[in-house]
Image (cartoon, rainbow, N blue to C red; front, side):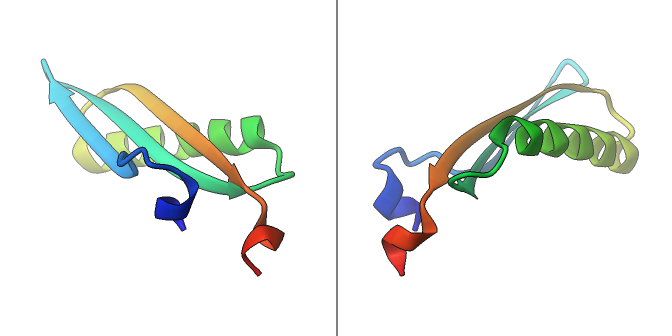
Length: 75
């Protein structure tokens, strides 16, 4: 589905560790009509918490790149 939506080849998760801090970029597809800002904020909070808990390193930034998808277009 991601190939159909965009020619942008970035997708999934990118993680960069620099100077002992982590930056995470997430590329997600959500169903059109969802509260995108709420979903993105929730993703940021959960990822930051889980990464810091697992790696014991500070997360400097979590970027969530969202693309909306109308499910009915693919059914």
